[in-house]
Length: 121
Image (cartoon, rainbow, N blue to C red):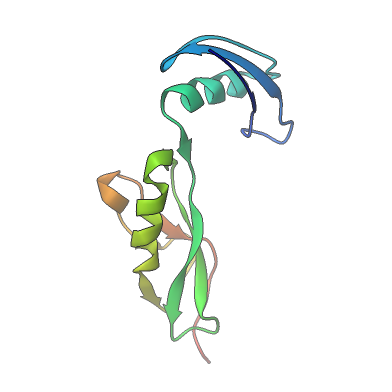
């Protein structure tokens, strides 16, 4: 099979022409850097994404704090991951990098804070 995709690994956004069979990559053209080829390989064999969202914040200046996964997770797990994130409430103070949900869905990936809130003062 053949497929065109836009690489999202860097701001260039190369248009990739990918040929594959099942989950096996046969060829990739159109990439400007090695990340393009790696992106195509992963996208065909096991697509992954970094998750960004918010969690509820108790006692903070704001009602929520932004979070993200500290590594990509399988694309097929995104909706299940979001269900788990939506169950979380953290208490202020929160610092960037604080783990708010460890080992989400047993993936070994943590959900971490990407903003800070020192709480109501």
